[in-house]
Image (cartoon, rainbow, N blue to C red):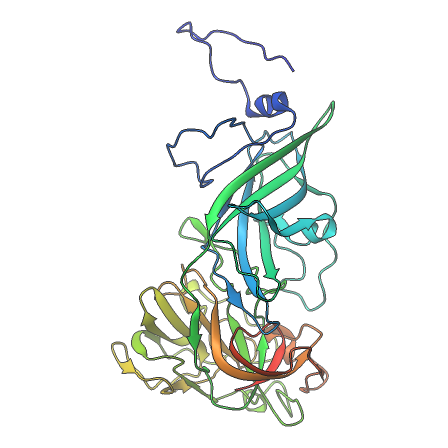
Length: 424
């Protein structure tokens, strides 16, 4: 496609008149990009081309081992179309590769890509619902000037180490009135973390517990994109909601509208590691189950809570505690196993549970959510349907439909996957 040239008032020829024209001129693109934020002043790579999509990684991907024995990398690719609003892009494939060898370590295409990508202001269906999400529309078409998030959850085979640097290869076509124009681009070289996840003791007393909304599916924790203070974060990426389970597999018995019917209610929470208490909030009343309460003010989201600083830049959050049960104050040093308070239903909580996670800041908003593992536990089963905070008390009974798990047995230094039932 020929580009018309003209001179501005200084007599100089301007830059390309439009990025869409530049992209289409290239036809098939093979390009290299840096950090993806547009702030660097490094020289362009040899053979650099205009690319229809830009990309930025929202966190430092940290490898962790889950109960399936695989090494996981779970993070997000924030992808923006640089084309005009009238020029859509069809994204056909996302390959995550080892930047050193260019070997593919994970791919998304077809329905899998459609189910793992959505516009930032249009959350994936099912993330906050009670039934499985319907399949995403295929092909994946990003409208011009639109920003999407691609939820990447890579599971490497047992024994395979995570690459030190990842790169992301995007391919598809710019959709023009005259027909599709194919593109390929390699973007966002990203170093993975060399710091292992915190390996923690349990946050609750010994017993049987249900790990709800943990990584790595379509849950409100994993896919909770939060715009706070002018930037996006995924503050609950690896958070887990913990529910006490009884001998018959029950999480509640009796009237689900009564707080005392829930086995988790007023169960002790304990320090998973030694550390200093850096934040305490108390005095918020418990919400009335089993229907989700109105969304509280942002400062009350996690309800009554305790935050421990256990390493530089690493904090443990214990949220939704019972008012008046907190046994520590800011500045206290606590040893592992110290009782911090009792499980309640305060803040943005529908049924009593402990919301537990690692954070990179002392406050929940804004923060990042890195992975962690537990020193030892035993998986005893799993729950197939998505039963979580907002629908736990709406089930016909409080008994979980627990079925055998392929990962049953003892685990050490592992992260529990979503909807596993385990014993601490």
